[in-house]
Length: 172
Image (cartoon, rainbow, N blue to C red; front, side, top):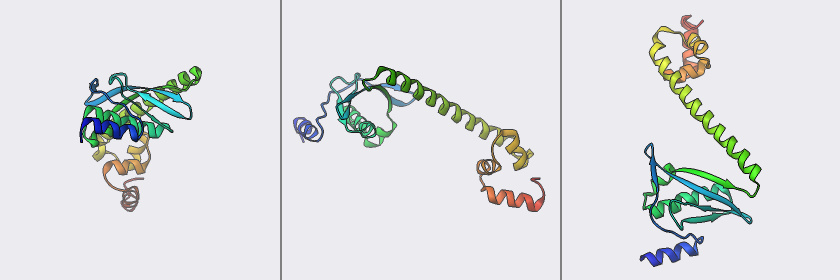
């Protein structure tokens, strides 16, 4: 199919206009800023780093899929790469106070997710170092997690480890 044919097909299936180039890399993932604006009963997204690249959808979830797809097409990425794109969404609902407060809330959630991932990694690492020295119960108290979580991290199920420990009297 010619480039003109692809453009016609795209326009018939959602009015997406395309131009090439303009991403940057961040920790191995392609990162793009996306400006999202409320547009009547739907949402419009523009990708400033790829001039002329924009798409529209009825919902924000559908818009996310459309944005990933259009960036993939413009950048000639394999379909599997679309899910790994790092999209920094800048939302404009028409209510600046809502936009600002929702943005702060999303930033706080991202920070909590980052901290939770770091805590989980530290917990696993510490348990690996001291697993042989501690019972499931003691490890759970020391690390501030459930006995079931300790058993998961050790590679067994909570029920099996707890039952075995009770029979042997080592988890008491």
